[in-house]
Length: 158
Image 1 (cartoon, rainbow, N blue to C red):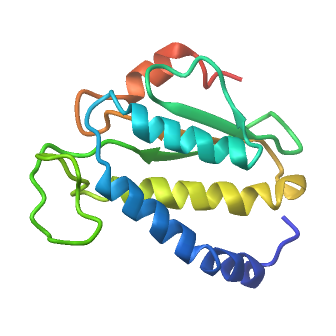
Image 2 (image 1 turned 90 degrees about the vertical axis):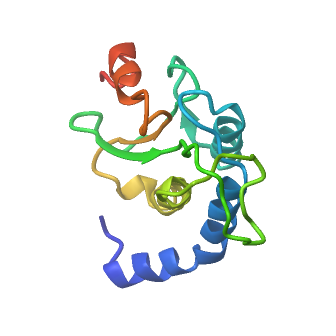
């Protein structure tokens, strides 16, 4: 890429407020397992608003998007977990879970926010990308396992 690292870091720092907003949104609206309709819809709305290609055929509530680079050979994949845990939140934070008995206790809210930030950074540099970049938002990381349905769907096959 032609972008130098200091420009990339500057632009990433400029996304801090957006990423904090997204993380807090996800934190206060946790969903568990493979069924994450609100989380999935939020991510899809974001991707659509940025003009990002969302791939059809992703299983369940997973979301797979792509930014096309100079080549479709050897694509790069970036992945974030989406699901929360069945743990009551007792933090008292202003953005604490609004779903009783569920919370993002292991950072998946941050994973999604960071991947959304990566979408913005790379979309701004799409003409510089040497190959396609895939963004995989995966439900069910904790249990029952959301990676297998994505792999079995064949959606990631070039």
